[in-house]
Image (tube, rainbow, N blue to C red; front, side, top):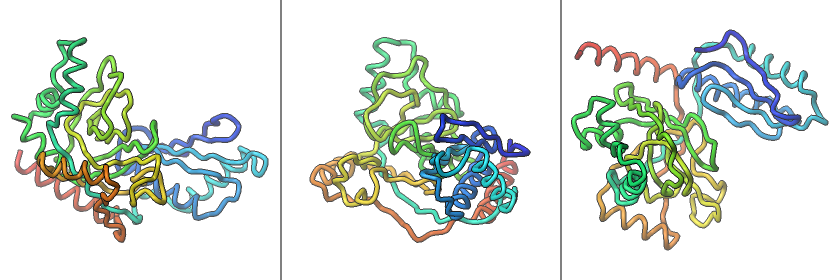
Length: 291
């Protein structure tokens, strides 16, 4: 749900949390990205950083250069000038991520957790049960059938929240309770309606379905695609998951280890929300016709 007006909350004396709506909704998230882009383009000198989230964004600023009240007023004015309609376009890179489903690393992680919690259904099987999928092969097909929208980055450097752009590719799953104390770097998980790629070995709670050997975070900036940023993704990118076999998986791991691996990144594209929403509506209607 999109709120009638922006909601502002102070985050200490150097940050403002600005909420536009509530829920994991693509249209609200796109408006978040449009507003962040408009605020950035306004060139307000006191702003030090802008962090888009699912239905909100955070502004970090210098309070010695602008007051909380004045900055809120500036952003309200930009929002009013932009308009509330879900329309427009943004630059959007398309990044292909290789994934080995039912891989050894996440399989071992799930097995270790089940030693302490034996009633826990293995993650891929649980996701299949909850989404009416007959087997793990069907889960792999559905998960890799869509491009995903990078809705937000956060919680951990490089951690992405991904929304599927194909309506029929939507997969839902609950988080672990209690969460894991460890998750392999590169694990691919589902929590709520989001997919994530764990950028590092961390605790976690998403249901694990696969693993990518291609890093999405490189703190040492060792690989060529991380020379300008420690994290691979930017908010507003799109991600496509490419299923690979064990031989290709091991080959990619070897190229990462030697420092020669390059990601498949198409960086000249523009994402039109108008065209996307028309297409998504047609897809949804086609699915209803099949039901």
